[in-house]
Image (cartoon, rainbow, N blue to C red):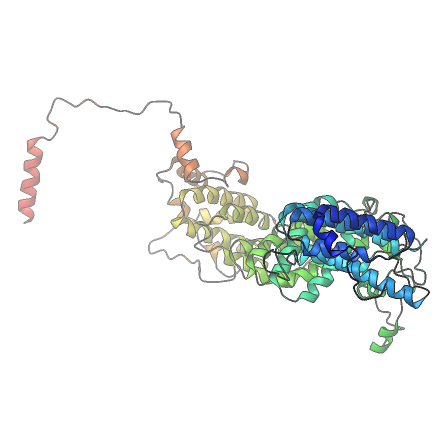
Length: 581
């Protein structure tokens, strides 16, 4: 056997007489015999060629499973251990076999994005199973390893999603959209369950995204996995499920032995570098810092069992992803919607995302509002210093905010942002006054949200009561400066809420009742805003239609005996008109 591809192990005439399924069975049997007897493995190349050259899904399906079974046998027989052979001829055979296995896994990478669902699922399951067998093959007693080339191919198939190389399929594309069934299968069975798969996936996804540049489809695919990841560990005891059994044994107290890390590439993204602090006394110059070595380092297995390691891989992945989201408001909105509960609590340094979140505020609309929510979470929980937060929030209170679809979300978040009783009265009064001014052109459903919101703010800040007790004089000029961008400089506290008083005679009884709350003593408890945020024209109509009356309205009335339109009244109007002329 040579390194070059050998001729088919079956005569041409025989291949024409047997069916494809029989051909697969014969090749699988021949490979199993060759493994057992130590003879030529040329049938393995024929089996891989048969799988990749067939256009019939049924044939491809049976061929890839047959190739998977014999690949597992090769791994268990020690032919795929990655160690250099003793003789030159044996080394040529080993390299040739490694190349054929690589051809097989390359074909599976494209098959994961095939148009046939059965082939997609089969290829994915085979790739994940081969990861176990190939990793076992390259591991040694006391020195567990992962088959890094196969791992990277698997991550590439899940994130880049190249088109299938199967014959008679659609045109090949190097980067595609991840299939929903593959994504759900990977997330539900592996990413959310196995701690080692999550750790390796996050690390390799980080490297892959950095290498791909600013491709928006890659960012979309990776985000589709991360936004569904809800099982990040919060305690070391939660790290207890492993897809690769050789990593299940905890060695958290072991130091790394020489050669304990599986491949040298892993030193490039060592998670422990996040916790290194330069020594001022020993590393006084840049050259000294570069020469500084780690005194105590953990092995790969210990890293997989360390909670800090998982958090750093998670942080690295998000830090590499968010710059690629900045150009897309849709992707940014998806990431921001899970940021405060699914991302920030698991980051080593949440402040690393501050620049991206701040840039998302510039999108405005619902995306900017979600970005403000992220900034508020970082200010409240992670001591972020962002002095312009309320200035940015004040800019969102414009003429459109009471008419948009995300109006309820806006009031819900603004109620959260203004919940502190330590906010300056000048700032809170500016928000109240601007909302009152915008209420003049607001729909009825928005007014029902706005008035309880203002009532709660005034209950929370009694100093604002002066705004509803202003004595207007003749030629009154409202001192509120509505064009001032800073809520601290609008002079709203010197103004009044005359806009809300104008709704006392509103045609909707609900709105007029709410408006009259500001004319009565503030003895009612604060309103629960959730009871007012879902009102629409439909709910208002249904409320009026279902209203019960204590006294039925008059449907008819009885005319007096005198004339409906007395002639004397008409005569008086005619005389008045004549005098005017």
